[in-house]
Image (tube, rainbow, N blue to C red; front, side, top):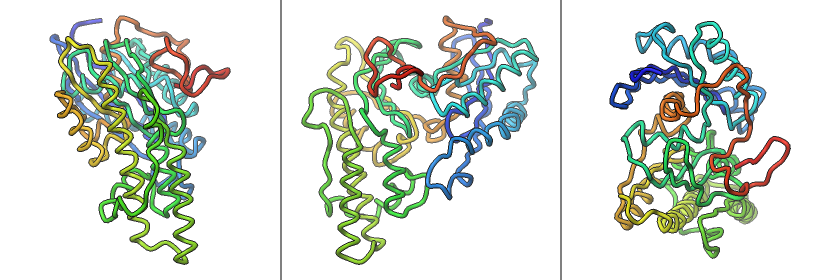
Length: 362
């Protein structure tokens, strides 16, 4: 591969169809020339969450349009592209297949090399794209489907320190929003409602803070909010807007406390001779209250704090293109590239959530 690269990225692992063009110069510095994201919020709103079949069909309809728009915005054609990077997993398998098949078709038609990228690696390497953070660094990857602490030692060397043993925070935010009658996606709705709420009105648990290590759990917290909501409805005959805000604020405060304490513990695994940096990425990292708390933890740990721009926290294709450029030593793939619903970053450790015929979940 040439030193100067222009990579087309494709992302379709959940409910955002994305394409981007990223230029890597001779010094290894990256520039995002275009980043197009077509969300599906309107398609799933009536169902209170993402419907995999609807998402897959929407990806198939929008992928070529997003790619065309990304090329146009970057003032490029396929002849200017060095390689094609695509999310090959993990994610909703219908969406991942849509992206992989589209990328294969482009690769076959143009002769451009194909790079299958782990979606989680895309998030984990985003601080390198946006801030050129040196290895190693501590990464909190917190999104709708995943939550784990990683020591990122290199472009393909990820050490998992801990993670959620059940619901991911983003999933919990969506479910709590539905319980409270708030809109989807749940993360922004909870954050907005919490601004008018009293986080101390309801006492919610902080799961696993009594257990050593960096593992987390959010399922019990979700159940506690459900039972409290039901009691409020029973006593008051319904939920007022203030009840919604107070419940949202209490839930969000519990999540923040868990993430903050587990982050402090994760710092204990940091190599003593390396500059300390905490990076956060993933959709939940767009929550400003969470960012502020984690930045405070970083200051107390004498560490730098890096949070990508909001547009690069949520799912996007720029991170996929950049991850491919970082991981060139393991590429390229060929037309046998398979879509993977499960694909853990650290395969040296037992699966957090168990395994099945499709492999380890996380």
